[in-house]
Image (cartoon, rainbow, N blue to C red; front, side, top):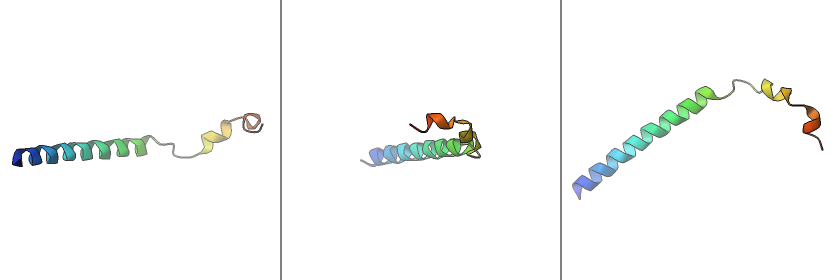
Length: 47
């Protein structure tokens, strides 16, 4: 039982690290501004 608890603890630690890395990567890759949205033609936004 103790080994199972250690294994689960290790898996949770690995998942936590992976999630933190994915969040950090997403933050770093996000657009710095929304200026690029102004390039969308207005006619395609209005029906």
